Image 1: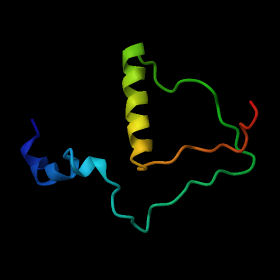
Image 2 (image 1 turned 180 degrees about the horizontal axis):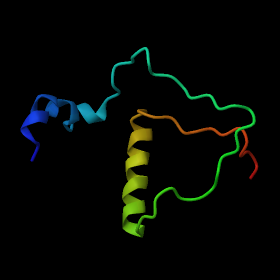
Image 3 (image 1 turned 60 degrees about the vertical axis):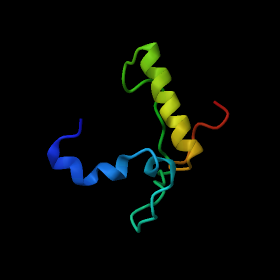
Image 4 (image 1 turned 90 degrees about the horizontal axis):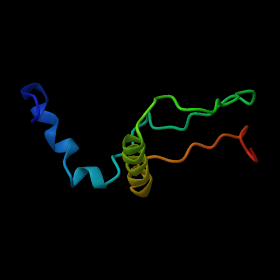
Length: 79
């Protein structure tokens, strides 16, 4: 059930709308990391095995729909 104050945006989150790429906006851009940036390994959130599978499925769905791109870390090559 959607709270009344959010009903005007219900269509945006529908099944059909979620299967297509949103319209490009001027604020859509890549996040370029500084050359000296070092990514940290590890989990940000502790999740159960079932929740991790659910999150991975969501990520794969988003990548399949081309809503997001994989993060490329120039510091983690060959590690």
